[in-house]
Amino acid sequence: MYESFYGLTQNPFNVTPNPEFIFLGKNHREALAQLLYGVREKKGFIVITGEVGTGKTTLIHFLLEKLEGNNHTRTALLFNPKLTVHDFIQYILKDLGVRVQGQTKGEHLHHLHRYLLNAYRKGERVVLIVDEAQGLNPDLLEEIRLLSNLETSKSKLIQIVLVGQPELDKTLSQPEFRQLRQRINLRYHLTPLSEKETREYIEKRLRVAGSHEPIFTDQAIQEIYRRSGGIPRLINILCDNALLNGYALDQKQVGEKSIREVSVDLKLSREPRRVWEWVFLGLAIMFGFSVFFYLNQMGYLSPLYHEVLRGFEWIKGILTDEWKHFSNLFN
Ligand SMILES: Nc1ncnc2c1ncn2[C@@H]1O[C@H](COP(=O)(O)OP(=O)(O)OP(=O)(O)O)[C@@H](O)[C@H]1O
Ligand SMILES: [Mg+2]
Image (tube, rainbow, N blue to C red):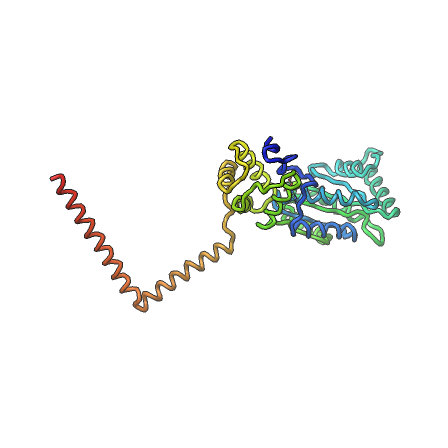
């Protein structure tokens, strides 16, 4: 809508996981390196967690692009894990391009096993990625664990990547999943972008969308970081709304004020204080009180009290005189 107004060729802040706009911060790079290493070295189970909107699905799409460019890797992506166990097996077979034959779960499992063995003989790797894995029910998790048991004497037949919000960690830490837990060889937790990365992220997206001028001021970017906490989805929503606002007001530069207004409309409050900030504040207050009591104890504050009281008396005197003068005018 506003693209031509800012000289852009496409929307820079669409909330779809488009690999063209990918920005790999330090954390994303490390996660990707772990994933590629895990798949290449056939590490079995890999778990990636991260808060809502930190870029897990985007990272998976980027990984798939990288893996699909490699002739020796076959991939299946399950993006909605709300399936029955049997549907799950059928889904994987279809996604791997295997013609589903037979009716029963046993037949389908047999096909899958044959496919995996064949791939192994051809020197191919098979990777199953489960997105939104925090929504997996216990039966499906158990089935996934059993799949990871498929191996030859030398190697795993399938690599499994579970990707999900932090609740996934909670689920996996329950006693019933201790067998699965032991099979996890690599884990990574995605965190939000830093302030510097937030700036680079915004610049990258604008550049890809065709911008040649800085649209957001430095203060605007600082405010975007404060309001979004460095979470890419929130950064996108804020920037998109701020650009729309600028377009409506015919302003080509987006400043801090605009970000604040948009944040209020979107109900995005400032990032809450971090624990260390509270600790620092508490220590500063305690230090202030200690200094006060020490000076009082040493008698340094008495003359100061005296001076302050004298000041009050002086102000009171002036005000009383003024009041008398004012009352006399009306008598
Ligand atoms: N590394 C990145 N580079 C570019 N854009 C990103 C990146 N990470 C996230 N985004 C943007 O943020 C949006 C949200 O990211 P994504 O859907 O990947 O988050 P998520 O962690 O999977 O969220 P959820 O927990 O809700 O599934 C994406 O649509 C994309 O536009
Ligand atoms: Mg996601």
